[in-house]
Image (cartoon, rainbow, N blue to C red; front, side, top):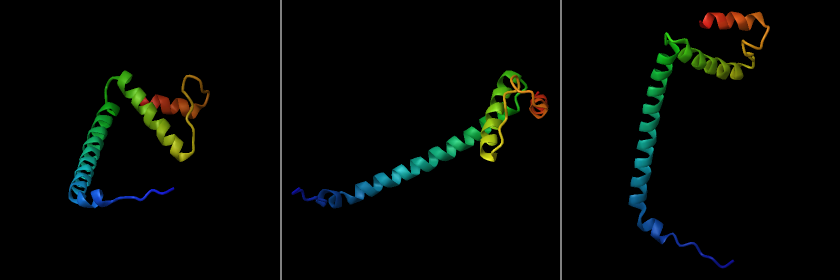
Length: 93
């Protein structure tokens, strides 16, 4: 294989490449800050909703996600005979 790499064009345009990298970093930080802020606000509003049709799916999603990380599993309330699951379900209403 007789290929030689030519980085002359890269070094010649090093300034614009650094400018592009800096813009990419700024956009990434801004997008993450906006997304996290709106996500936390929206999630907290949905969890506190008075409408069970909105609140229960969000709370189930949060509970299932947190149960995966802690190692315990929460069964579906309509399929489970566990009293602890029923009491959790009753506390969500």
